[in-house]
Image (cartoon, rainbow over all chains, first blue to last red; front, side):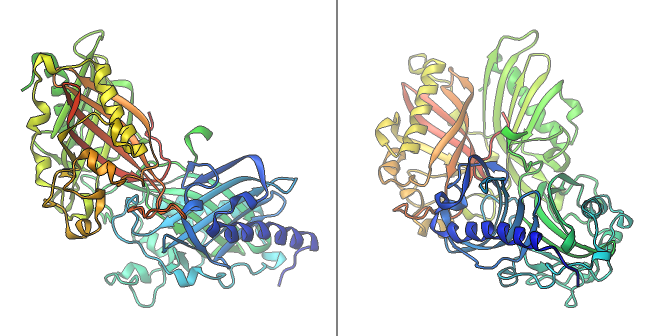
Length: 302
Length: 299
């Protein structure tokens, strides 16, 4: 087992307390009680809103524990996601907070994954395993032995390698272990022994591993992994998070492959990779369906 | 009926739909720096619906055009909507709104709104969307016409009225009909075209009511604001004005004191065409789709 300094542990607890507070206050709409810097930037699903709008106005519940947390202590950044209730329905909330030197939150980015949502560009209900996302993901936060620890640059390269490989169809670009699970909105989408996604028709692709899916063309409908940003790296746990969009051009004329979508859409994702000894060992992601070409950064910040 | 004056611009819109179905934007006279958006996103011309469209209906439901001065040919703006198909035989129908601005020589602006979801919980788009709306195309008697400003004022009165829940603001005739994504949402007591799920929800305050009566029932309290209004084309001969705007829906807000029919926050991009005669709104036809809360149109 690896170790981290007392100072880093304290920093970790400090940043986690901000995220805990965010989720605690959300269902009552008490955003005024957060330690907010003047001029805080707040976004929900890529749009700049006033703090208090969006999910802050509609949330009625929030989980006490969350599935995924990645933080960069020195940079004062934490990203985390877990389950919330909005108007009686399950939704996933991803939050990224930046805390300044005075202990005030000066940036809040949120990603709300809603199901059966009329604003979604996917007409189906979308898969969700709320139970799985209700608590911490086993093993994800384990410390990596110091000898196996990737640097921040190596972590970014691993995440980019995955995104490059999936969007170009080049499995060789992805530094991934054969037994690496990938969980999307709480549902495992690779290496499934049952060979199907819950409630869907049998699909041999679900039994394949990450690299094999790419090798066999399962991801060919993805044209790009665009607008990458918000990288957060934690070498002690071998974790890196990135947000981006997968572009799905849809049923393009003359296309011979599988096109799971008829109309084009862009899939926003927050994705976390656990890297040890040079290979991705575990992938967690939250995803939704937005209009084709949608950016993460609001117009006025570009 | 198409006048010689408006013909050029309306023909251009027809050419757009024809070129789209063939996937060939090169057939259009595009400016080198043409600006293109689909559902509020700035994307490269040739991508998005341009890559997936495989058919277009023979005619548009509505068309509105407004001339301006240009260096050559007919300059101005034209917009309209009609049905298209994406993805060929195994594909799906969609309702497409297109707005073009031309300098007279080349198209400089292309704004599109693609409605891919059948309206009000239906499984298919209404048949009505395959036919031109004769009522909208009708030319007004000179005595019934107003200026562009008159048209904009009438449309603004409607939008203010809906946004503020104040029926007094709205200059609408009692028999004013409103069609949204192909379904008649006022003066429709038999709920023609609506699935039972929508009717039983009591949506819009009652489909049998008129435009103002619905507002009086406070049926639109769930609309927080109607923002970013752009009056993109007006035709005084026909009494038409088209506004592109966003309806903000904050969802089921805690402590709101009423139940929003829309659960989660969203912003609906709506293109709304008003026919105004004698100072009163006689007919409204609109298309729209929901997007992430707070989204902008890209214009």
